[in-house]
Length: 249
Image 1 (tube, rainbow, N blue to C red):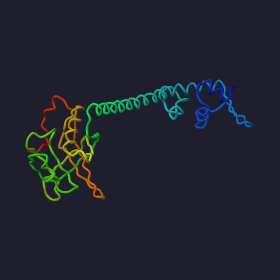
Image 2 (image 1 turned 30 degrees about the vertical axis):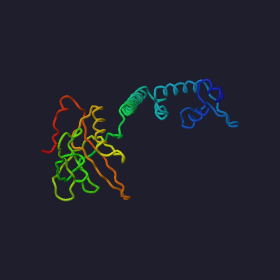
Image 3 (image 1 turned 90 degrees about the vertical axis):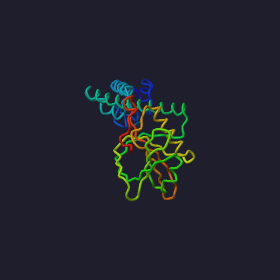
Image 4 (image 1 turned 180 degrees about the vertical axis):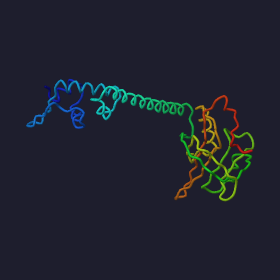
């Protein structure tokens, strides 16, 4: 039989690891000397340790290994299938993070957009026809308020907008939808942030799927934040030139 240090050297692990395995009930020593407290291990423990290490190399967590190390092969196969699915999700998330970071390096932008799913909303608004984006600020009431525009880039002429109305106005129902949103940095300005956001969508193969919401919020300290929220869908040759059905006439 071997002492804990000898087994650790044979298996290429640390004594601390073996003590942890014993503590969680994964690998108990063959015997413990009551007088000295020394742990002793035999061939059976070495074989079990090698199986544990092999299952770790397959990507299983210690909790999963505890469940399957003595279980039938069908249990192991299911645990491996679950692990593969989880690893693929992790790879997809990391791949997306790499792409986002590379895009930020290649195309500097003022915004840090995030994808989200939001629920349906019902607003009461009054519609406006705007000659130039600079005129919007003067037409919006003090925050909190929401401004809506039906644009997918810099306007080339006058355009339609809508602003939330406290009383009356037209009812506008927005369905549950996937959106890209960003908090506008104070030094950036809404127009530049909006254009950067539209360019960001284009680089990712997304198209605008409804009105952009420009929400002006205020907290208890009277600090104002502006949030841009654009509903999106994947762009395709068939949908790229569609006219959005929620665009007011």
